[in-house]
Image (cartoon, rainbow, N blue to C red):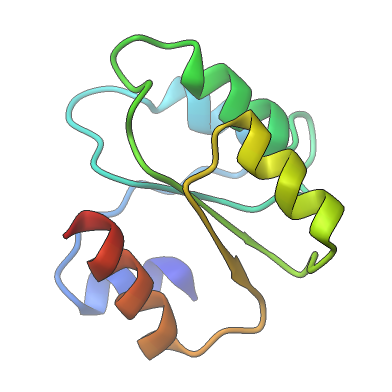
Length: 104
């Protein structure tokens, strides 16, 4: 749904099946990362921490997309380096609005 929505709005999208796959695909000019919190092999919090240690992608905005709406999870993601938060389910227009604001 995320990839479909972003592609339909003319964004270039690279998809990953989990955090480890995402790290392996971080190359070139990345302008935004959207991650779920709950993933196999490497969760979203660990992915964010790993990205923030990479000098090339240290300042890339990271949006967390998840069903988790607990304040503690939001704070944990923010502390790891997340830029923003979108709670699922979401409407495509909502996703595009947040992406547009983050990319400015």
